[in-house]
Amino acid sequence: MRGYRAHLLRFGEGRSAIYEEDGLLIVGPGAGGRPVVRAAGAYSTLAPRFEGVAIEHLPGRILAPGFIDLHVHFPQTDVIGSPAEGLLPWLENYTFPHEARFADHSYAAAVAKVFLDELLRHGVTTALAFATSHPHSVDALMEEARTRGMRLIAGKVLQDRHSPEGVRDDTEQSLVDTEALIRRWHGRDRLGYAITPRFAPTCSEAQLRGAGELAAQYRDVWIQSHVAENRDEVRWVRELFPRSRSYLSVYGDFGLLRERAVYAHCIHLDDEDRALMRDTGAAAAVSPTSNLFLGSGFFDYDAADRAGFRYGLASDVGGGTSFSPFATMMAAYYVGREGQTKRGVSLSPQHLWWQHTQGAAEALGLDGAIGNLQPGCEADFVVIDPKATPLLARRTSQAKDLAELLFSLIVLADDRAIERVVIDGADAASSSA
Image (tube, rainbow, N blue to C red; front, side):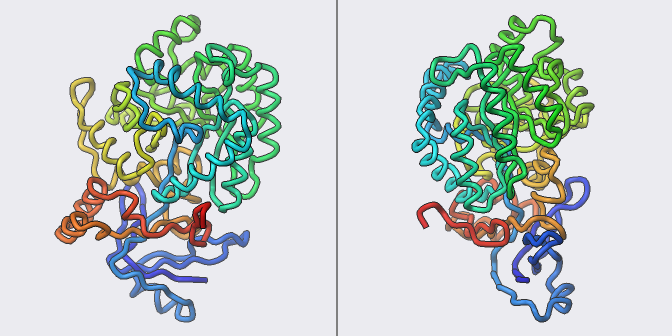
């Protein structure tokens, strides 16, 4: 076992944050031998119980759960920062041409290294990721994540229509490939598989039906896709699937709404859609930097909470503009405050942080495993330096309470504040290390 003494942030019931000014985190083997949190709390309380354990003292640092990115596109690492008039032109002019390059396995493997380096550099220890329509893009990402001991969930994109040559797949072969990838990667070490229709317009009814059949056969795999991101897309879906009540209902009609189903955006939903999310156990991956960048709209936090469905935060790189959870939390605050198209709300710093950790874990059905530092949780955490830059140091030193401290970090911190990342109980290393 090993101990870490520092400020300690974790989460309790009802999105509440628990903060120890002088905390102790004890990590040791769990029931299956994998490193887990054995104890977490006040140093004065726990230290006498662990007198023989070596304790590393990290004065002035904050121990916090590793961040979870609930929706990110690994092949769009090099698309980030590409200008466009909106979602559909952005896909056509940048995303699809770049994703076609992943037909080259060596290229996919090289980008996988950069992608995971970026996640870890920003303190992200778990991600739900899209690959491309090429099966070996999944292999490249999974192989690299496994080498690093990361918990990662990913899937081959399904898109058999309304897509250009180079990324469009064959209906039958795409489903055969998906099942083969499930068998190859799902449950292997810390890896999981997600059945991944790109979005309804790029999938034929036969492909969606086959995806739903796989989801019914493999109940513990995840499902990921996009829904109701912008109004042009919603109109297009209405034309393509006239028998479905709504865009979200398309997925339900094909058996793709259930626990462990995560849908990015969920902006242009109505109350019946939100009730469907709640009743099926599906979750939303809120992607605020992407939604602001592409002008897609604003996630309605008030309506989501009234309906009672799950959600968490996501970078959505490369439509999203940063891998940084701090940038994503800041953008989520802006989105919440917007009050012209919906009821504006002021999200607390604790709630913002919860969305990128414990809330995201709940959305994935992995609460109790990741996203927190309670006993039994896997040993994925970050060491944050609240004085990483002069302005950040000045502001955090004046914080009167936890809300001010966390909000100062949300507004002013970046990857320089992530001093250290621990994955599966060991310090994370970059691909160049």
